[in-house]
Image 1: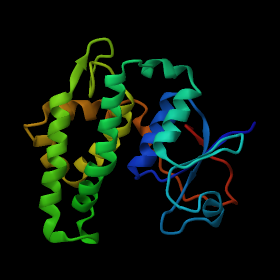
Image 2: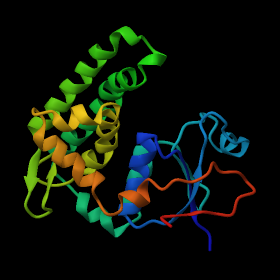
Image 3: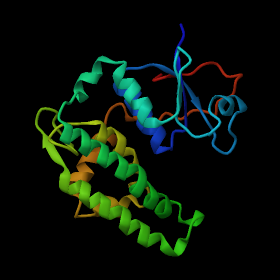
Length: 222
């Protein structure tokens, strides 16, 4: 049986959200973990830009952006119905939140988490800038009684939730105790915990050895 192939790196939030979408839409793929400091030549030939995730479909289509992989997973699944929405204002809000996350928040998150790569004297500045975005998210969170969980937009889960939570998780990872004790984001913490505590989270974060062409195919989820 032929499978779609996902090139991934388990600690990359872009890869995490792509893997999450594949899991939640019940796709089974061949998982190839890419060591970013030693990228296989086969991977670079498929995707010269050399970033993960990358999905190669059974039909040979190469999808190189995490959001496009998520949309592909939804479009090729009956689960697409959960995100079907014809409200233009909500669609714009989803897009706005994702763009804010992938640009402004990611910019400050990198310089907070990996300050040693940038200007360490500005670590607190970038932490504050990133946290201000989290405060904005806190103010938008609502509770969905139907889904029994907190959501970013209009009382129901959307692509914004799936796209953003791995980045908030990465922010938390810098100082988990401080994040968990922070009193100004109670809803955001519950929202994030709904993903971290999800029964499929261990499957999402499965540890694998870096892929090489000599390995036997590893199915995800396994």
